[in-house]
Image (cartoon, rainbow, N blue to C red; front, side, top):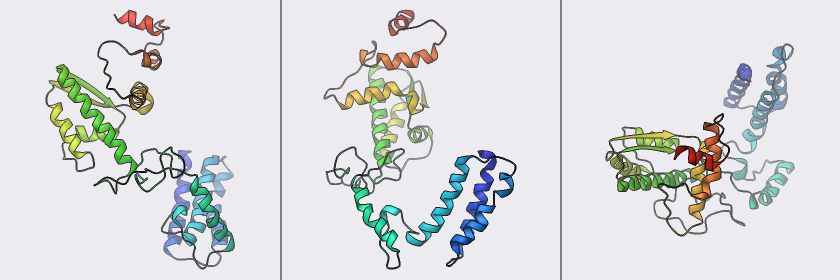
Length: 273
């Protein structure tokens, strides 16, 4: 796929040049005759991936439709214009039905408004019911995700200090938090104050290490966080493994101890005790 990326780049550059020079009549014919002919020679020599063909087709569709009907916004925010065709007016009329039952799927959350966009797994509005708190009106969903992870980091450091630990290894799946804690520059983001506290607490240890782990490798933490969200009490385990995470912990351990004959959590616990 990567070997053919230059075809997509050539098509994108060609469309970008046309966008800067406004086109009117014959746009569709021009696109079909020029852009679709770019990969013709290679198609006679190789079988191009379907994904590449889909990407080029998507670029052409966006150029034809977006440039005319919503050049500076998205489909969800596009307004009805006087020169719109009957088909597009009908599409925008039916859009209201679509948006009533639609919500964002959260990844990083860096493009979704915390208070204005529908993203919560709740019926009807999918938006927060409470009014925005002071200073959070412009927050994105990604800000609160990072905020919660930073709060958890600070609480974990305070616990380690309270237990009198001298050496510390802390893992998190938030890459931005790792960069903030290991960086030397001041953090002026939404979590800057919490990061400052964490850096101060880290100075209490003889040695420490902040590691980034992928979310798929952090399932034990995810299970504990889910349990904590359903509990009204603070829970802390320091010596014994809680039974509620044994199955997830055992699956992770199997990946590390494959070939050692360990077939149950009790066998592992007895082998290390």
